[in-house]
Amino acid sequence: MAYTIVKSNGQVLTTIADGTINTSSTSLSLPGRNYAGYGQYVDTNFVHQLENYANASPPANPLAGQLWWNTNSNTMYVCPADGTTTASSWLALTSTASGGTTTFGAITVTGNVTANNITATNALVGDTITVRLATVTANATIANANVTTGNIGTLNTANITTGAAATGGNITGTWTLNGTGTANSIAGTGLYVNAGNIVINNNGNTYGIKTDRYMYANGVAISFAGTYNNANVFDYLTGANAVTQFTGVIAPSSVTTANITTGGNTVAGQLTGNWTLTTGSRLQATYADLAERFEADAYYDAGTVVELGGEKEITSVKYELSEDIFGVISNTAAYLMNSGAGNDTTHPPVAMTGRVKVKVTGTIKKNDRLVSAGEGIARAAKPGEATAFNVIGRSLENKTDSIIGTVLAIVTVSR
Image (cartoon, rainbow, N blue to C red):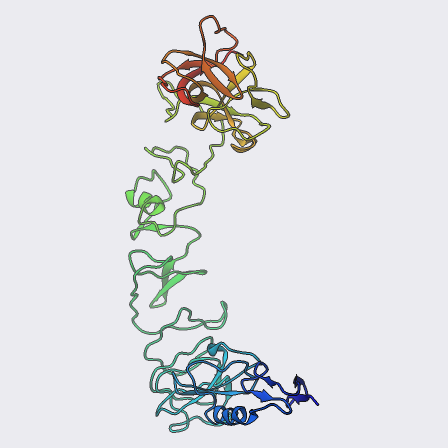
């Protein structure tokens, strides 16, 4: 008859068939009825239990409540749940070494904690320790707790609070700020007020900084009248010494500056309003073509020759010597119109005029007129082929191979 093994809580652990031995349900070897040589396994089980599975790692197939002696730390551990094999998940109980660490979950002390009752030689670390009176003469690490009275020689903490923003508190003494700089400090040290004001009481007279987004630069007050030309103000708003880059709105009547930037040539920015270049002023660009976004029926990379048509607004030129050419896809537009229509995938920029790279096939000589070769590619026009309606532009450089490539061309597509 098979053995049915039942745990202390009445739960069936396993059933062991006759003539077999079970080594997978627990850390022990459980022999079934009439299993030959069962005595060796029984003796081994006794030894393992006597030594509490002394090893550097937990035993296999443990049950909740099982003990394990950790030979690395000389500490007794208890298995918290069936099958827990991760050492850090077991509950540590005690250490045999003098002055060793004993770790529990939550401890509630209802009486007084005095000398020789609980001694903290290194740290109090872990869950919750609740006491009426506690004296710590060494070092203590107290996480997520409150110290409501008493003296602290040195306090290292990220937060000091009275309990609420509206609850008053007092700091008495002469204090020095030390640090290496944080998000809310300048030049290594700083005091950051999240809300409210800094007020100094001098014999009943109160002085301080009551600000509503005012700013002081290097200790010099900013005047809110006249012309701002303080280099320190510029530095602390935009320069390398700025703790946080200014992201608000500045609305002066006039700005004189050598540089206006979004921070990088790939970072988008906006100009709002109707702007005019005064007499003699120029707007210069790195690139040299004028382009506008049009909706495409497929993705076209830079240099593709396109025409109006297809399922959307533009499609690649289909035929050789096409007179329907409309422009060339550009990724170097000096001025891009209709920029908000979409992105380069759905609405690629089409160069109307200017210098732009053009996909071509065959050899090209500088000054050659370019015409459609079909499938979105151009070629050099042969004698008698060029007309006012099929010329895409003129090449500005030579191409000596016959494979598909690109040449820089001046595009002047007739409309």
